[in-house]
Image 1 (cartoon, helix red, strand yellow):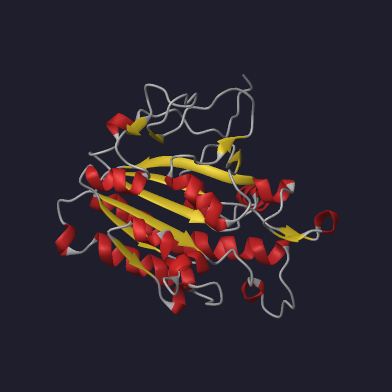
Image 2 (cartoon, helix red, strand yellow):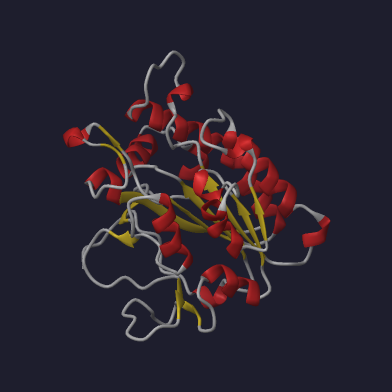
Length: 277
């Protein structure tokens, strides 16, 4: 097996579920190459403090757009390491023939998604939406959020809001610090919308979205996440998953956008780590 210096260490999820809060952040539309470039350029001081020395792990996403990728994520199929051999998963649902479930995998035998599975383990499940598939505005926009005990979306969380990440982080911190959740484990999911087009507003006077504005958006997000990671650390031991659901094309080989199987769409950054009080 090829050793990947950026791969996070294996972790026994039986020692996490029930004892740790879980924070799952999807950096919607973030390309692996953009994330790794920002890391190597020193533009991610918040996240870099928790990433391996080599930076982000390069993984394959299970789908090329938000809805399909998150359906897979909530079924336990997080992005797969982009190297050969079976890769055991953190979470799984019970089904015959799984080759990626091992002794470290936490299996939910009685549920169709990990959100309800965690709720059955005593977690308060919180969804803070970002892109349109989480906007609660129609049945499709409610399909994924409806898995959670509570789901939140506001216009200031959406793709057109310049400081959407600050608004999302503020609400997450408010809920995690709320008295009604004191003593209860929380599974908090945030779909960060800032990387998604339009992102040209993160570089003054930029006339169109491109890879530079995409990376500028990530730099902006990194700064805002500091408050959330600190609030999580203060609250309880917290297992954090940070990854992208898919990338996006800015003209590579003539392609633009996503929902296509181009390398820049299918390769995503991934990391997980533990925050201790």
